[in-house]
Amino acid sequence: MKYWLFKTEAETFSWDQQKKKGAKGEPWSGVRNHQAASHMKQMKKGDQGFFYHTGDEKQIVGIVEVIGEYRPDPTDETARFGLVDVKAVTDFPTPVTLAQIKADSSFKEMVLVKNSRLSVQPVTPEEWKRILKLGGVKA
Image (cartoon, rainbow, N blue to C red):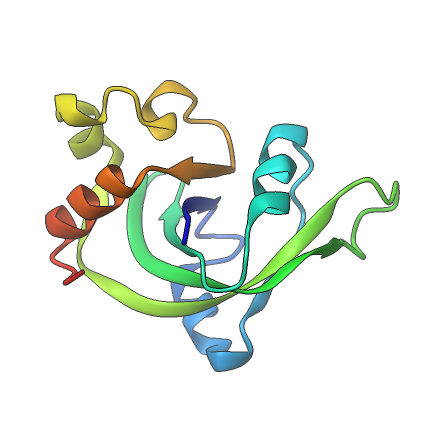
């Protein structure tokens, strides 16, 4: 299993909206960055990801699971980009902020710290475990 981080503006698509989609999940569409799309192409069913609110919040608020692998994104008129399907798994009892992550030297190599604008990015198993602990989520 691999781990990921999915970024979204809470005003556009929030964690609460993701949870309301239930077991059928939601397509993670609209990604138009080649590096982010490359990460999505690597995703397999069962991979998990952090659900991250950008904008004013800048925090990890939940965990999603990939339930549908990379396929064409019908919202892309150029037919160059795709999407994956994700469903909500669990809330973070305590959201983990970008400020917390940046303040912790163990995250200095994390993609979120080094390339914070990338909308879909990998997370190492070590980063995953540490963030779960910070957020009060049992592994």
